[in-house]
Length: 227
Length: 227
DNA sequence: CGGCGATTGTCCGAAAACGTACACTAATAG
DNA sequence: CTATTAGTGTACGTTTTCGGACAATCGCCG
Image 1: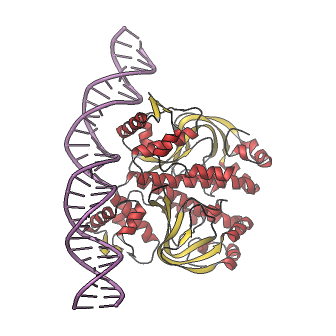
Image 2: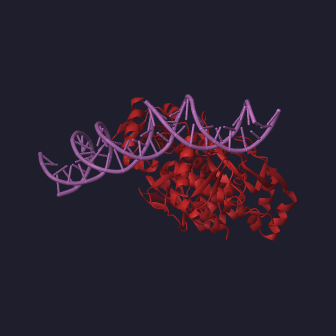
Image 3: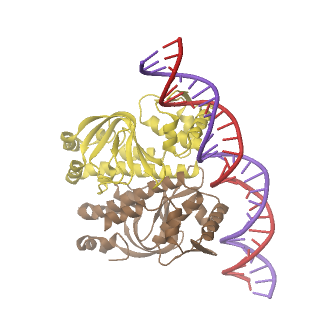
């Protein structure tokens, strides 16, 4: 069922439990899927595109703490028996998702322990992603964090072209825009990527992995738990 | 029951469900409560002292991503239907905990939805803490991150004296040791802390909060969910 | 009391990232 | 086809942090 990593791995019964509530929706660029401190109304199982979870300090600009694509879902707070989170989630690269009301999800995971377990396991891999972001932010330089981000985005799209601007990337990483431009050029010089206007093409994944030291842990955890 | 923030807020029945399995243990400095990639054998509900969750890059030194004290528990991965995590958890400031086998916890949370919900809610506040660490690591300078760490530690101890060395703090924050010494002196000059050998005394919590811009979100979330 | 190890203070040059400004260039609209 | 604008390249001095070294100091043990 679906091209979503969580849904496609559900058992037949769990699948049937959700199906009546799922509705296909488009995810236009910039659409807000969750707002900080506001009740979560809908859960999105992404099929295409990328959403960012962004933390804002009290006064200052935000920084991305998590990335969600076709492997995952939004609204983990609901799975964790909460109903909101202090962070914002919005569409970074347009796509589609299957959407369902949070209240329905809450009921379904009470009915099916295996369904709940699936969501919790994804939640665990997301937790590892958060920790890995904290590690990267604390110990890696821009070039390395950029490589990590590109790899994570690459995992979540079709093809090798990631369409976004340096400006956006800078916002995500919480650094200056010229810092991103410089780092990208370094990666290009090493033959790891190519740059077009508004787009980056991944040409050497393995090379990027060597550059980015913090990539891999969440991905390994996801695979361990789902395969 | 107990001085642990989670346990003390459980309902009577949930309490009785856990009590037979809990055993009081000492937490000596440096004790490893979880090892990266290894099966989690025991869950610890801290009563006193502080444990650190540390992420290590493949080759390099680690960095702290989370802090656990009397408000919380270790072994969240088990609650998330996993059995291990890629990160290490060890005792940073000695204390005591109530300890139970992971297998028992797994069974109890299947028996009691309300018990599971309690753990999940704590898990949510911990997720927010991870995100907040990622924010601080990405956007704050050493002095600000240090203020945040001191506040988080202060929340988890009795009194105002935090006993540890600059060296340890540097490891936690993922920065150089002299960087910590310098930042501490800045905080001392502002009258926010006092320094003894191997110890730091908090003298102005509110002042520290002003310095540390990333403090507060996880704490607010914990309070919202538990009170 | 003297010595020793652990802890902290201080300094150096170098690297990384900052904030800001401005020129250039490609896509787009009129 | 030109004018406009978003996106990118580049440059400046400054701040922050790094990596490493070394001196000073404290607490403890013999």
